[in-house]
Length: 495
Length: 121
Image (cartoon, rainbow over all chains, first blue to last red):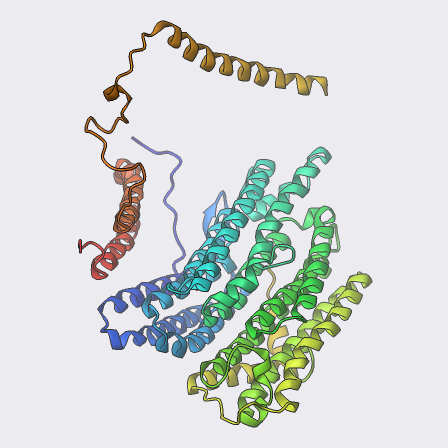
């Protein structure tokens, strides 16, 4: 039997080198764990770190390239450009950071360490693939590759009912959102006859007016699917419970890598495939952004547990990124405005990932020995452990969007893009929300610096965590002092 | 608009015919068949042996692992058969790709063996 349709494809192996390296390292970690003695299981973590560093090297070796491979009907479904490489690099950095948070947590608890690091690398692989994916099927596979290992990771504490609850809730919401996303994708395929984003973009602008409701419906389903992944209101219910029940380093991973992965997919879809019909779906994003910012911030005001506070703060931060989607314009001359919206979204995501991971690292450090996850126990931390208190305050101040941390620029760029797009009401909502958010972030800072401590015992922080937090804080200050560090990268990173 | 809803008439007729067919045949066979129930005839059929115990039986959770492993290799077979039929025309690249695919699944098996999931305790 001869298959006429099948053509041998030449694969650009260098283009997929980062993914290959990461996949191989994940398997090395898994197999090494099988042969390590019980007291040596921690070696999985340095192995995983080496794998991510090697991946980072592969990413750097591609720097400046513009390649594509896995072609479908002449257009590449896997591209390597500045946008993809920027996010691949970001995922690697987040991965290393989460490894640093995880090490002591998973070594001291009775966990399956090898499996955890294997799953984390696999999930990270999904993020890397997402940054390069340029057709619906690759995007779907990438988002599933991010989510499914993360579900198992959040249920990692097998004997703990809360961890099981975290995993189950995450699983159910994840399945539901995937189903909705697939339905949206099938509608898009039905309308345009292609799964490749460039083809969709060229044919969706010229469909007849009677099909317009279907376009709105399809984008709506896609949006709802992604809204679960990025925990946007009203699809955020799983996030606080999952973050609280999961091991805290996993919560850090979900709140940074997993969320950024969802956003990267949404950025690629909305800026690449659907800008020509932006008029029909822009209001959806405006509503979602306002609801996400406001509800996230208002509910965060009432939290007494630091992980839940960070969960709701993460929800609110998603809202600011969603604002950038509400600025996408269609028609001629929109390219410049869309570029600015895209750049501010990229800058926001990069800075958010670092400061949020830092805040989680500080929370994990405090809860390890001599502390807890309750905000009330943070009172007077300045007198017990001045360094930890300063670092935590730095991350919270950055999340609040206040100088001298990079978070201020992140918010400012989104704000400026909103004003330049002349969507003033959205800018006002953002401003009000920034004030509400400052209240609960600074309340923790105030408790740490001005309240009396219950005990005088210093909080012991391992060197690995100190180094990780120190680097993150230094990066945030550096970007605040000299923002081109990140804006230059984002500026020359079109999709 | 009328034409549009007229199409539903087909579905309606189909639904009615389906319902009549099921109810009709069951009633017809009730009219035709003799009915002499005995204790043996009324027992639950279980592969020809006398049923033992209640309907709710507990199964060892170990079967779950076997079921999962079975599904993995079942799916592997699904991919292997079409690959085998076009293997020659696709050449080395297809061979290497399948080796990678089977290799990954073999790793899963190695994992299961090392975790002693295949030993019956």
